[in-house]
Length: 441
Image 1 (tube, helix red, strand yellow):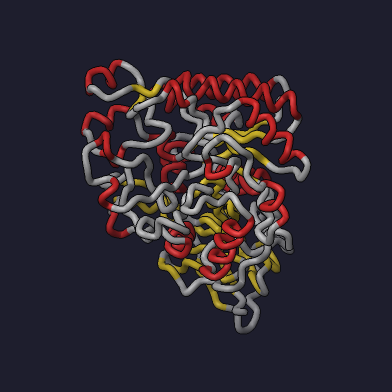
Image 2 (cartoon, helix red, strand yellow):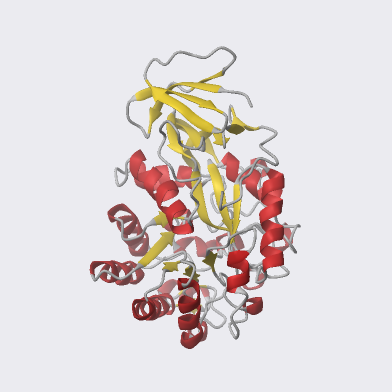
């Protein structure tokens, strides 16, 4: 394995230092290190070194919807976005509700070699919300699943949700809830408010999210398990989670990049690229989730990368699929909304996009500080570069980015997975195929 001598990088935006990467590990970190013979130099002057990013919420679509994305194309997009680990949601076809399916996804990730893939198992059989899936079998499989979610659908039955929380407690698992009360969102198309009335689109009330979050926090407090809230999007949801944490309840939450930046006003275009679940909310909601991410109420940023083929988005709004791509733009949006606004430092970004998601998902090889002896999972970012988002330049198989035409700051220059570059000089390499590690190793 080639050794890499990374020179002059600003560690988490702080002091400049050199990093020596060899045999899958960071061997040394410090100023003015001596370059070993045979090491390849990576000039990182002016670049910020961060631990490899971890996305707890990615849709890779394989198996079943390879026309939208595959594990290979999705992990390539992840690498271009600075991610070294992604958690693949269970809404595939067949659903990832058995040990066989989650092992298939896990092995595809190892073969691709661009990011470690941790499958998320479905909570219920077929994600239908009526019977618990094979949670124990998925946990004991080669994929060692620890996060379970019916994302795309809510585990709406309170009794079943309680049983799921009780079940995963036995192996320290996590239930990641898609908070959406189904009876309150029947036929919903966008955020409920004055604008939805003007546009003639069925509204999606904030209380549909907030009621499930409040219920599940109370259920989890009773059970004493681990609850994670997917794609939190409203001011009320932030307030509920903040109050719960003040009372010492065990709950974590995520926000997506698009909910940090975009608002419901974009629906006036009737462009289905802006149709997403949960919907884009109001300016007040955007300000609230930014504040919640800044003060730690919201633990992490997760992309909810949801690729779709052209025909699923190039149609009338009501017929279009929900979802947006996000892996390749996530870090830029966070820099734009949180770092450049002084709400977060680069050290905070490492916390919200690497340390904490890795801890929630129990990815021991990721979310580690850039120090000697740590796995060499890291990303080099140029914060001074600005770029216009062009869908056709995306590495993802799909083009449904809501940021088309926007100028965003920051560019991933290099990504290293277990010491092997998956991106160098802003371009994909051949990756680290076959060098991925078992989550339990």
